[in-house]
Length: 246
Image (cartoon, rainbow, N blue to C red):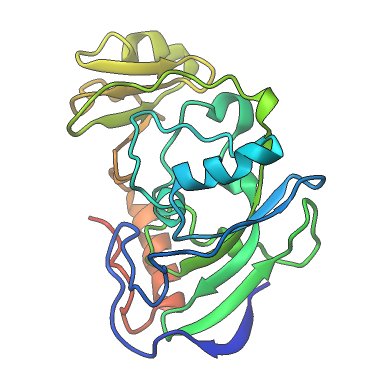
């Protein structure tokens, strides 16, 4: 369910691709998160940086169980959600589709809408708050998020991968995982999710596999592109938000 509110942030302009949005949407000094320790929920600005959120959660004994494969300290939560790239703890704690419980979003006409609830279980209808996940700011732009977090004591923090420069992430069937890890430029691998990271574009692309670059952009099938463009026509008919990645 998507409830449109009366407020508007900015009636005009364009918001650019890959999570970079207008300052009217993401404040350079976002407000402090609101933590519900007993419920394991935090309400946070999409403009907050991941490292800042983790530091805020630490005194409460909580954490967002998200560790990028390669560190990117300046990236904001809204960017990570829009790109929806695999991460090091995904096999244990899953990812954004399980953590985003609701939030407030900016629509293409400048109006503000909300969806979901600040509870771990909700029957509020269609999960419209999932729209920002993996869609690169093409449909809506997240403004504020209700996130599920975990006890920090449950998280075994992996070591960061030391790498500078472009990289690619590939996920394959478990039967193809060993062969995928034999490719040149292997940086990291996770047998739990059959995922590997490479310093070069994958050359081994078996059936039912997929890959993306560090921005979360990879090849789209004709059906995927058609579905995305149809959604784009519904949510951004005037093309004011980012375009569907090529």
